[in-house]
Length: 163
Image (cartoon, rainbow, N blue to C red; front, top):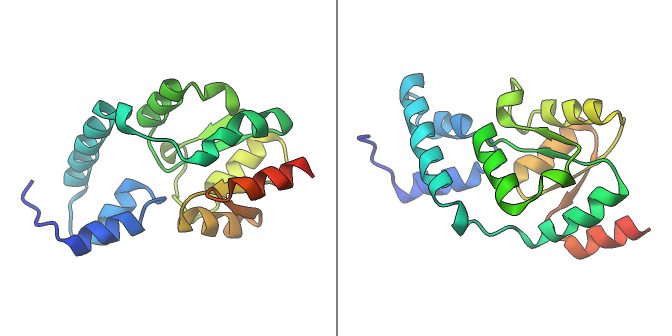
């Protein structure tokens, strides 16, 4: 599409993971018109959806059956509906979540707490714990006033759940 993408741009993109794709692109290439961002978004979606078989779940995904039996669960993600539904179907995870809130369900992306607050409201609870794998997940939890547990600390999460 005529963009010169440097290693610095790639690093900035990786550091933005957890935010919505559109927000990351606007930060890296602030002068990009919305119609071009939509084209980039569609190209990215096609590439990712065509390579779902290469996606490897984080080890903490093994907690899903355990967590979902013990408490109400919500998935909050910055990803779009088509991608999320494809992933949930591919890994057979739909039954583990009582509520799914996607990037296109809210006006503001992470670290804004809107997704967490919507999930809590839909679950009918006033507090929760966000298990996440990015800095924006952590900031989102803080901004929503709930506890955050890093997804790479699966053993710690199991200890907390068992107590």
